[in-house]
Amino acid sequence: MERLLSAGADKVSVNSAAIKNPKLIDEIALNFGSQVCVAAIDAKQTDEGWRCFLNGGRVPTDRMLFEWAHEAQERGAGEILFTSMDHDGVKQGFANDALRHLSDELSIPVIASGGAGAKEHFRDAFLEGHADAALAASVFHFGEIPIPELKQYLCDLKIPIRI
Image (cartoon, rainbow, N blue to C red; front, side, top):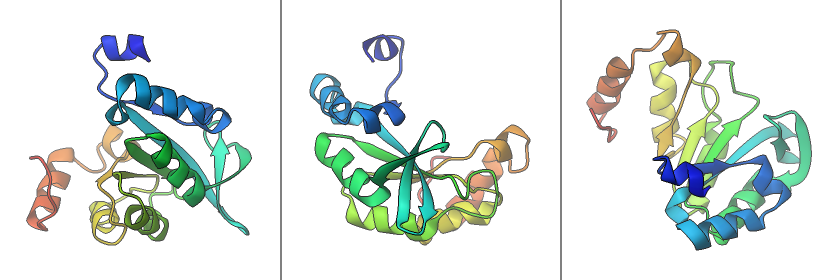
């Protein structure tokens, strides 16, 4: 953690390691501040609800999304990065119901991940999912959504965005 921050990182995300050892979040917050710690959570919808997974969504855990997100916040995480593994790569939109639940229940920022395929999906993540931020990969890497175009689109909708 110290090496990453010394190399110029502003934040560090922890995912599987934090689920395996929740005290890791406490240690990061205590030693470097909550603003440094992003608790990344990969979850899938199951019959029991939103279950957390390890190793990029491949290994199920006994942790449930909303309880784990609350615990991560209580331990000192400064942000939650929620990736719906069901939506990731599908390009049909973010998991806005789960996002809204997280955003409305937590006092720290929630970042949406998994599902972006159109500009409207970002709009929905902010307006319906109440996300504080949203990320995507392939739509940007492959030029499907030009970043300046997306920013202008969101700005035109009065969604706060840095142009």
